[in-house]
Image 1 (cartoon, rainbow, N blue to C red):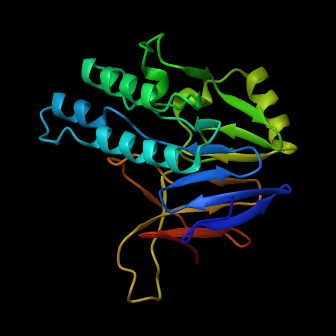
Image 2 (cartoon, rainbow, N blue to C red):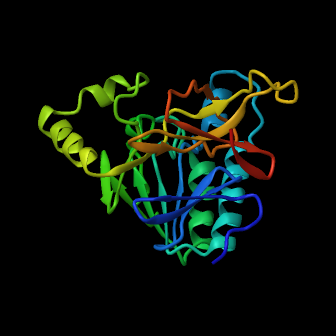
Length: 242
């Protein structure tokens, strides 16, 4: 399948990856779609706290994801953490919307690498076709995680991972290129008068690639790339290396 206009194609470990303007990553050889940080149910959590947030972000996020599934026809979609926002996010409405979504995307396998927000939820409906990995998943030549190794935004829960488990992950990282989320990376141009707002971006380091947050109702974190790192900003319907 040839890249669509607006995609940015990069080759990593001999594999072709397409960074999509819809804030997703597509692995062409294996027909795998990656997204990160949907934070479904965040709107409901805010409303329970008395904040007047419209109940549309979950529906919009799932609608956009379904369009990607229909367009690219992946055999598997892997969520790199934070599918759910909070412990109380999976209410009756969210469960019904996700159940309907999975039924519409039934030709695709689903896998979740648990993120720090997912760990709060004790309620994972058994009828969801979702394979759940507790911390990482090896899919050669990639290691799939939620929190990028060495991230300063590492959560307390991630720091509490057992030393044996952490050592296993670090060993795998040394021989694998990681794909991660968690950071919600964004970029803002300093020299261009045309770029005055933060743009979601893909952030490539020497060891891995961090995906932008896919969810409609999420914040972002400005990235200051170091020497040798690349930023691929999403400007409307294009992904551009900056």
